[in-house]
Length: 299
Image (cartoon, rainbow, N blue to C red; front, side, top):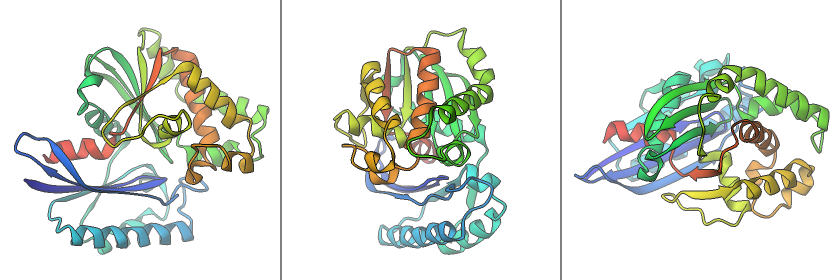
């Protein structure tokens, strides 16, 4: 079997995935790591000094893991914050020195395409009309698919780190702030909303990340290979719990991970705007996303 690895340097989270690929192009996970680094904390235009250091410290640990597993075939991709931050070059240079490999800074459309490829590794997603949604720290990607074919894809600067910095200034988040956030989202994705008028979407496919909160808060079993289904009443109940809670109350919500407490409100508002507009029958939560899409090119 061939051993390959991907590091996804997301704006909020760093991922490391090491797999073994069989001759039938099926991959078996050998190691999976996720660290919430928060590079987009405070926005995407400059990485805070302490976050930059934490990100590099995380990559030092990733390098130790790669060496332990004797990985020779590695790809590293960077996304929105590494596209936009004024001090990105400092981070990239130091990160490449630590890892001994080049970092690919991919543009938004390429990011959306990799997400699509990752989702399509799951055969049950290849029937019907769906809107894939991947909410990151710096950007959010949308991909419209029909019977497995990509119809349209776009990346918008609507990551939770960005939206939190712009709109979430009080606890709990006030109604005027939520209204302003909703208007900002609708204005930003106006072209997508116009496009969606021509399609009846069966479901939203949430690509891991903050969508995992819907799994954990609804009591669904989370698994690195299994898709979960969230009904719209379940989503509405979780939305109300989160949106009405202040920071301390969110810390005590069952199923809400501590690392999601700060940014989850704006992420839920983003989901609500989309679900209200396209009226899907359900939300499907996929454990696969960008890193699996990159892996699919390496297999």
